[in-house]
Image (cartoon, rainbow, N blue to C red; front, side, top):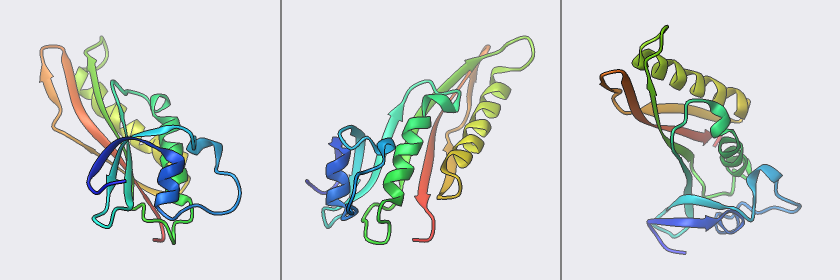
Length: 154
């Protein structure tokens, strides 16, 4: 355990270190024996934010399990937990087709991801999608994005 940023932390240990462990088993979506790609820490050396990193995400299916996992961790004993938020960071790119430009397709995809993420967490978390500028070259478009989840009523 250390302040700052660490990589590949065990999810069960993160919940313990955050003070979020309660009696009973953890939800299977949390994957207690799995690892978070990145973990941000508070200065007092308690976990602040689990972050998952993905490549080439154009549909929610590629990050659905990560969203459920982070939402589960945020909901776990949220009154006592030091975990403040979670995020899924990803890159998305696409090319023009006969119907839409790459830029139009990318915006539609990102909007759909945000909408679908909100339905997955079912009002247990606030969901916000932030993205970089959409870059366009010839028939291609790409952007970086982060889907931020924060527990409600905290």
